[in-house]
Image 1 (tube, rainbow, N blue to C red):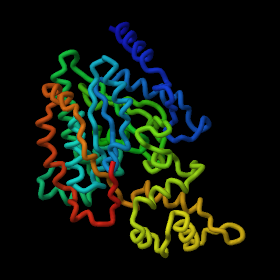
Image 2 (cartoon, rainbow, N blue to C red):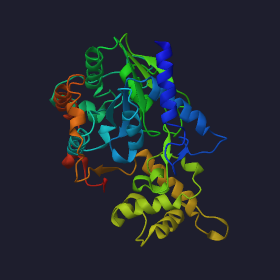
Image 3 (cartoon, helix red, strand yellow):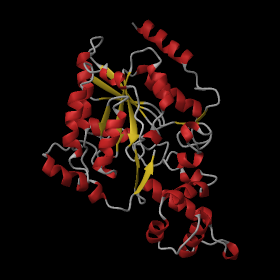
Image 4 (cartoon, rainbow, N blue to C red):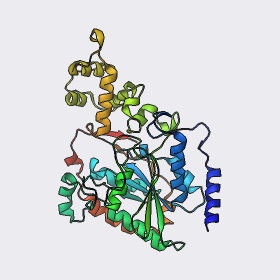
Length: 375
């Protein structure tokens, strides 16, 4: 049995070397160079998770689900021939209007099972809370509480798969995703204890970690990796920076990502938010902001790089609220999900949505200050 597992692992390695596709360049989680983290070491840990997992949970940021997906990794898993399942976990749902989450769940479930989730933000090390209340009470818990939402639905999905998969009595669940989408926070919420370190700095998790939830389910956390290529999925390095995948202090050019932000936010909204006068472009905005904050270099020249990093910190930290709309065209792979109907109970998953989403603020309550982007 061990020999067969080793053979499958070797075959997986042969099929998927460290250079994933021609022209693709692997960057480490923080894009911080060899001195901070090793690309090869990170990818080695990443492959461990893929090789050992029966089910792979891909954690997505609910504010930008498509921007935090790694489609080529999904294809790698599905093409491996090892009968692995993928489940998409839409994390940080408390930062997005209810209607938007409903649209994204409908869109994503045309390809894979998807679960709405809010990680626990409680500070104690054990007995992290989960919300299990009526729809009327859930709103207060969502807006004001620090408890987890969606864990019961996700655990039920995993246990149902474990019961339905006749090949074994226990399963290993791998956790993958971009840096800072909340992978370790999801694990802590499922374990109801702080079994993984968490941090808002990209690259916090360095090595794969195994956590035992119960006798049936083991979790594997993985370091976040940015699979970056020039123009991959239409993404530029500036757009990758806006997903908090790169340490802001290590950016050589913090101005270009701010140009993307300024292009997406109405001028009047930025003027009110940062208390600056009218501007025509990102450079003028940064000059005004530097003058307003007294961030000047010798000779009274505005330090636009310094204030650009501050704006990026605001974006990554949630001071500038934003979310994205699903594409108008839907995926055409619904047969993938329907074929998993017995192993992964899709009907139960959809039924759980009502209790999980009932506490989310709607478009009216969310306010008009958020930046709405199109995927």
